[in-house]
Length: 570
Image 1 (cartoon, helix red, strand yellow):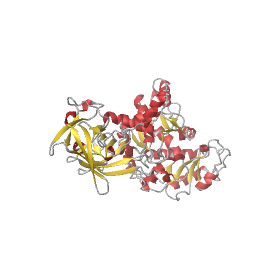
Image 2: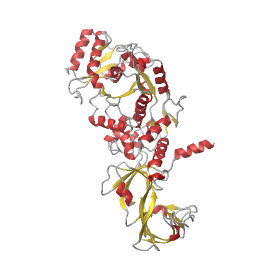
Image 3: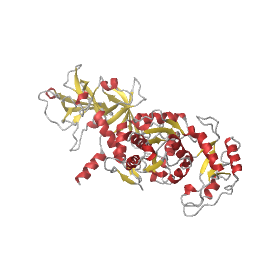
Image 4: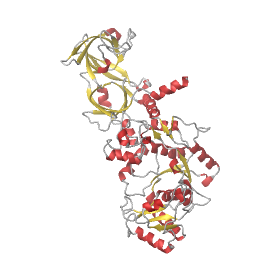
């Protein structure tokens, strides 16, 4: 099982190991002292927070050392790619605050050069056409401890290989009937060197090149060469590509010389508790309607996190905290939540919303009268000012804020007990009204007019403070309470069907939430708010002028910070 970590120590000067290696290369004058990175997503799905860790490094290192970063779509499999994904990827990168300028590329830009290189390698006896099935090729590759066996087609004459490869690209043969393989070493201890596949036949039209090509390069052949064609100096990728690095270097050296050669550096992936990062599994959740699309706020996709209310600065802060290492780790989702709370605490406007309302009647408050209470928009930054809330005889409060027979340490409202209404008066409960089923319909209380917050003589202390919304002015909203997508900490490590591990309570919808009128009049899609005493919420794009919809971003309770505080005292 992966080790669970929170933070990674960086080198002296604040550099992680990747940045340190880049700095050393620049100091040594490699590639003319030039830095060029790239982020190479496949356009076959939406980006998730793990991809964010990757491109934060790619773009961030370029910014830090005065280099450039390309965005290059690895569009070598038209069977799975779509323009929808291309647009979504661009949108997500921009949302996180990065831009590639005029350096937008596609692996398909290099199809002619890649094809010409393959032809050259065939002519030099370094590649051959294999007619075995995928199962046969896999079987004859051997095992990590046993050498593979040569393909019966390994020693085809060069001219026959050239002819077959040309005809493969002309569409003469069926998909799966032939591949082009590099002729390297079937006994190599690195399995990736045992005559890897360079090209396969795909007859699906490409979304950029149409029907021009019927053969498409494999990742290991296309990636390093695309880096070279673009002038990339540092190909930064994740640890699963460590065993691929020798093959990356083998193919690149078919083009590179001492004056310029890309270098691959690997770091650990971002693995997060209570979710999965497999693009295949995320696609499965979407296709099977187990979530409500790629931007479902329970998903670890960037568009999902954005819709939930996570901020770019919080995501970047989280990535900086966990750092970049050479060993895999499983990171606590609580640390991500902590970063989100820290950010929203500084920026989110405080408002009143009552999610489970019960009516409170102030029996000694004059009927038909109302007054204006001014609430701080953010006590963390008083320069953000205040907004007005109407105060009336009838108010909505949370049903959970009242108990007829409370336990000893219940500091909210109960018979004959006093509490303060936030920003307003101290009140004392005098009775309740119940329906035929015994459910409380109304709570009665008297207010003390001498205790209005901020006024002389208002400093009398009570232990409980309740939020509230005026009944005649309240607006109705919908709230979607989101919890973790999976019910187990590390679903990727569990045996069986991962879909059976989904949290059945990951979404609860509340239809009749009462919100204050200022919020109803001012909230816009993706705005962030703190619902007093409840948590942080974000306006969902599903909102209409008639009804706002809020997504619960995160609760107020910060378990990670609490654990860190406890550990510091130990």
